[in-house]
Amino acid sequence: MASLFIKSLTCNETEDTFGSDECLLEVFTNAGRKTYRETMNNGEVFEINDELPFTVRAKVKLWDLDLGRWPDYNDHLGTVVIRDTPVQNSTASFTLDGADYVLTYDVKP
Image 1 (cartoon, helix red, strand yellow):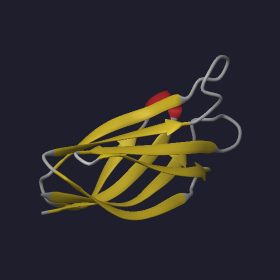
Image 2 (cartoon, helix red, strand yellow):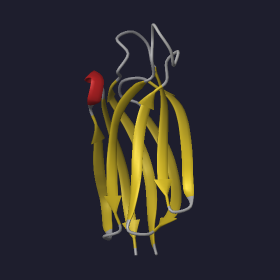
Image 3 (tube, helix red, strand yellow):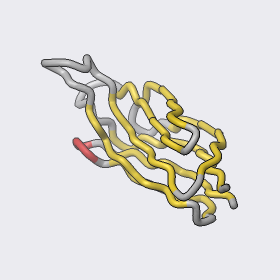
């Protein structure tokens, strides 16, 4: 079984035109769903430093939480699939809806 070590989430550009994004990072593994929340602005880094065991693949989704209903639905900023192949200091980008976030992670055997 591999382990996903999530290091950090960096905000290069928020989705919201004015103010910060209320980020929800969801990680789906064999064990279920784990979430991380942080309010972020341009140039900020959210240090996560958490390790999650998984088999074959893990799915990671990033959201900007807004009202969650009309007139301001939550914004899906992207989804990435991480395989169980060992890597160090790898990155994944979330760039939907005008945002620019980078997740830094390792996959350990």
